[in-house]
Amino acid sequence: QVQLVESGGGLVQAGGSLRLSCAASGRIFSVNGMGWYRQAPGNERELVATITRSGSTNYADSVKGRFTISRDNAKNTIYLQMNSLKPDDTAVYYCNAEVVNYSLKGMDYWGKGTLVTVSS
Figure 1 (cartoon, rainbow, N blue to C red):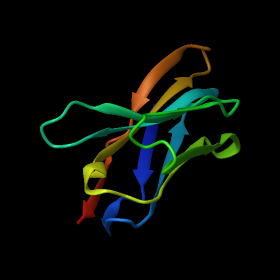
Figure 2: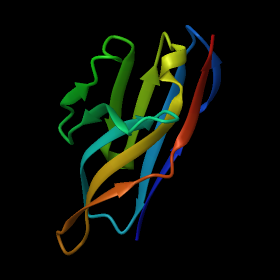
Figure 3: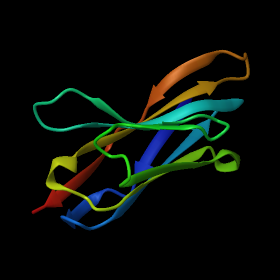
């Protein structure tokens, strides 16, 4: 089995910073694309940022210039550095990863989420 475990969420004032982490563990041959998504109350889940194994990144327009995604392939871990946080960034943040198992089959996994609350 594969698990994705997020950490780093919490309560922060507007303008502040938080750093999220997501570690993949279990029966993993390799991890391809990974990313962060978020879901605010009453809204659909939306993409925040993604990163390929080689380090190519993609960001939602709403977070460009404020958030930075990075990864450590040796640890099967990604990070999301969030600066200049706004109340609109309040959401549950979910980690996603395409994990290749030892049968060389890729499957999509999600973490359980970590809550980020930005107060005004």
